[in-house]
View 1: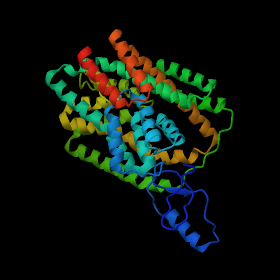
View 2: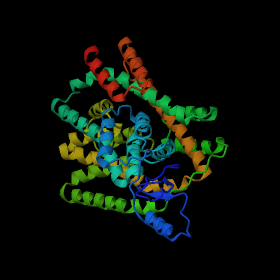
View 3: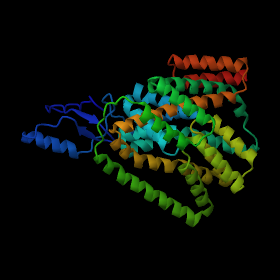
View 4: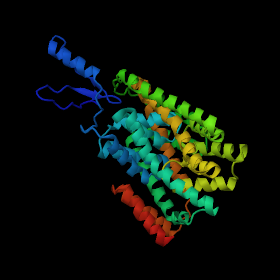
Length: 439
């Protein structure tokens, strides 16, 4: 990040640098090569892996990052809308990233498969603390959704009906609409700079509403961004190539461990192997966020394999809407009903792991090409499409709420509270409490 300075150690002069990626500093103002001591210092800095500092100079621990995203994951209602709240925490409060780096991450996570908000949690961790940071943030953000869905799945399996707690969430649906609407406005303010970008967002919203192919929408948005964003953006420096070496080895270890796990399942629990392969396939082709995976999951599980009937699967989707995190957490429900606790664990890992590996593999390459002015224009277009997606999700959620005066008042109150920067955790807690007595 331009303008960041390393903290001086002893009497050593601070070195200007920019935080690029994954625990590295690249020098912006090299020390004079004619100075022998400076040459040695320069070589030492270049060859040493330094944990990536946050934007305010604080280097968060892995446990702190895990807890921060665990707290956010508890209230991660609204699907992709939570990206705005991830930004509020990582850019606004914690200052782990700057706005520019975060928007690069949103553009990347829009163009690769997987649930966008889960990918953004991993991206923040990857930029701040490397692959281990990505794991900590990914697990912290997804753990609350997994545990709650597992509990609801156990109750459903024993009662064969939606848990009574689901009815309590009727009021919380109105709160979720407020959360998504506030996120749309918040992200729109930072991404829509002029009338052209606003029109691109509306076009993307219309196409998402018509259920067009998400990949085509993203490609169209990128092309429109390159064409319509005529003013040359500021060229940004490409990241240091050493970041490639930092992610390559952990990535290869992840791939080897995944292959080993699949092999063990194939040998000892072939039914779990087939479940893992199916969920991985769904994750790999789910471009456009978690909602894009639902139709494919329905086809494979209900129509192709007949593992459960349509009514049961739709009940799982309902529970997925009531739990925090992405809608693909329905995989936990499917895995549990088909193969019990081992099935829930395997299905959950398989629905998230492939897209996580893709993020780790592509982020360094993304950083290297981001210095291109045309690429920067394309990113601007993709960000406009994300605003359009948020608008579409807001409308879809609103259409599913059984509106009456009580729901309307609760939604307006939640929106006003979020607009005036009240912590989303308290908004959700208060909304859930009111729902207990009002609905």
